[in-house]
Amino acid sequence: MGPGPINCYPRVLSAMSTQLIGQYDPVMTGYMNEVMSLYRDVFMTKNQATLLIDGTSRAGIEAVLVSCIEPGDKVLVPIFGRFGHLLKEIAERAGADVHCIEATWGEIFEPEQIEEAIKRVQPKVLALVQGDTSTTMLQPLEHIGEICRRHDVIFYSDATASIGGNPFETDKWQLDAVSVGLQKCLGGPSGSAPITLSERYVDLVRGRQHVEAGIKADHHNAGNGSRIRSNYFDIPMILDYWGEERLNHHTEATSMLYCARECAINLLEEGVEASIARHELHGKAMLAGIQGMNLAPFGDLRHKMNNVVGVYIPQGVDGEQIRHQLLHDFNIEIGTSFGPLHGKIWRIGTMGYNARQDTVLHTLQSLETLLRRAGHKLQAGQAIDSAFSVYSGKG
View (cartoon, helix red, strand yellow):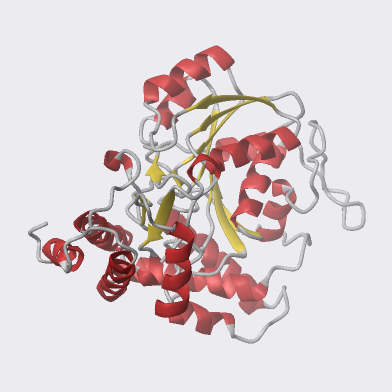
């Protein structure tokens, strides 16, 4: 019940145990095509370039950024938590001239703030996290794409922690690149990073096209731009592998392909809107229960993610001892946070397979028991009653 990874859906675990097949077996390439189609619906896009990067969600971030950034390019990163700092570092490692604006942890940016920074910096790329689990805040994106198009800026978002549990509409919001992971609301393990890329983004990176000498044919043309600094994360080469030519790049991580496929099928069978509503319901119940045991939530609740809540550790309570007891006495894991929030808040998730009434109630009851025994003043039973009020439609 932390900020992720969380328990997998059982059907996802079953899919991962399926036997391996050759990377050019028609069944394998058929699965690759099916995964591309499924994730277009997950991302709510018509982008042809929708595929998997083999690696954790950070691999998806790095592939998107290193493939579109050339040394000296200006990149704007609005930072409102730990993972904005990650985008900054990856862009810097790609040789970018990175400019940042920062919001207080627990707050988000207004569109006007981002547009003012775009006018001032004139970046090639805007890199912006949607849901940052370090602060539990959800950055609104719906007006940012239009701003980026007006100023001819490539708009990239990391939606790892938010997709599937919070609204995300790639095409409607005019995003050029999105990367995610499986280990949050999609209910899988880390190890595969679905991405989607607009034609605008693809046209840009195709200008840096490169084909390895060992497989290059006469009809292959090199791009005019500088060579992408990573072979493994070279998106034009990865697109050639996933495309009709099936030009060899790496050996696809077969078990993770099965896993990512099942995560998408599971989400789409439930329905994207239904999944978001489920995460919202159980997130509200968890928040109500937290407030019911005399605990203060962290951050601007108007912009809280559906699937995780930050909770101030009360005065006089050893936060790490409570986490230890929750794990070892009740078999429940919750998280602390990073940087300025480390040791000051807990982060409690309700996502994927664990966005359920029984897990919410069990977590609240267990936490209440430990806090009461630690001397925290609360009204016994109020946490569960507050959660039940949400479930009954009265909260």
